[in-house]
Image (cartoon, rainbow, N blue to C red; front, side, top):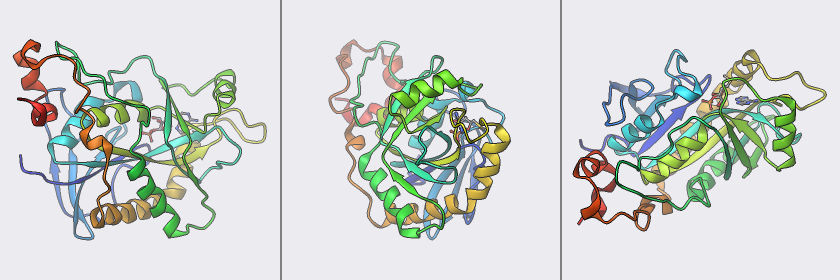
Length: 292
Ligand SMILES: CSC[C@H]1O[C@H](OP(=O)(O)O)[C@H](O)[C@@H]1O
Ligand SMILES: Nc1ncnc2[nH]cnc12
């Protein structure tokens, strides 16, 4: 399939569609890993073609554990996506990151237990480098985009650690305090598998984290509820859409060089002639540039 969009956006809780898209085309992508969370919306934003996916489905019918992460990332790759922005609701683990603030994290801690977060296996073994789990170049463009808009009452936090928990229940206070003692900044349930799979698919990935609550640790704030998350996300939705528009323009004008784009160069350990043909065919889209 010819490339349809260089830039992809995955919208999380409360961000089920992208404003300002024209020439919209809904595509149902079938992948070797099943169907994505929903149809992918191809559309044009300021003359730039983008691919948008509602992570939990447009009706929010999929919980974090049920998300078809591999299908989502594979589908983006099949449409030609090279840069992927995740817009996600998060709880704050630090006083300084207050509800309605934005964080562009640069680290993750994996507390998930029930996710498939690799394309490898079935006879083909690969180990990507993941010390820097988001694309720092793309994260820089994203943070610059936020800063340039000078959003009133919204502080930007460049960098920070995102704890990815399993859910769907929110954390206990003991867990929340544990993550705080680790120095983590924010907590969510979705971004870590996405970041790993995007790296394996050689897609540059960065997160716009929208703070919606103080989780359950803050003595002066109520514990997180869904109502709180969606309420604050809706308050910030216009800002989030403005940031996405700005970052899309910046990426298109000056696509950043990303180490993610060659992440598989030294990652695959299985000799090609030892890997099953069926697996090579299944992963052809991801590995074809390295095949002899
Ligand atoms: C609706 S509250 C919990 C839910 O919100 C976050 O979603 P996303 O990362 O897709 O914005 C969090 O990860 C949970 O999935
Ligand atoms: N406190 C929290 N914990 C996990 N995921 C979240 N998403 C938004 N707020 C959250």
